[in-house]
Image (tube, rainbow, N blue to C red; front, side, top):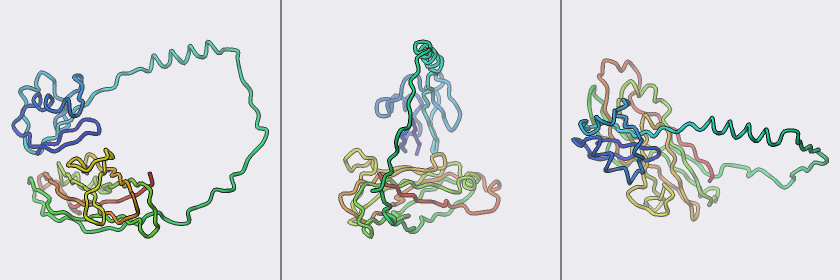
Amino acid sequence: MVEIIFGDNRELARLEGKTVAEVRKEYEDEFEIPGRAEAVLNGVQLKKKLESDTKLDEGDELCFVAKSRIRTPMLITAALVALALTSGVFAYTFITDSLAFTNVSSAGGDFASVSGGTSPTWKTFGQHQGTITGNTTIFSINTTGTGYTGDLVSTVSISNADSLSKVYRVLSLKIEVYDSGGAKMDINSDNSVDLDDYTLLTLKNGAVDVFINQDSSDDYEINVVSGFYISHVHAGWGTGVVGPTLFCDVAQR
């Protein structure tokens, strides 16, 4: 699998053997990749004239980066012009009264509860490519206890990426969300449930948001449905854990 990245767009696809130029053409409309975007292959910038000769391999990460144009001088000029036009004209205001807000009160408790589930398991060897299988519930979010019916956003993050980076060159977890009836949730807020309703938690993208739109309070499952990894040579790992430690934070929307 090859990971393609542009801005907030990410996708894992079978692109081994294709050139960078072919992949750029294939994704330029779907990801809206501008022609000036630079290709970065596994963290190394690739000259455009080499894109047609560079083929992708298993586990590669191809990122397209569009550099922002610098507009600071124009903004500074506009600010100086504004100062020149308003020179000598000043407005004065005075605080003449105050108002205390008396009808604002605390909700008195949490609007949802979060509990940890079970973790996927796999064996990691040095210089190895492996897959992560199964549909494992890593967190449960419950709003039935409070009766909260508003929308939610849940952030899942990796807390030990510094240790994992010594073990893995690539680590990717595919995350989906299901309701209490086992129905897949629309987590990207495009108002439809489809194959795009997932997000990838990786070492380079160590925190992801999933959006939950509620019609009524429910019990939701955040699941790792699949994944893959590529490990470094074992000699450089040192000691310590080789599995990720995840956190889940839930906020109102």
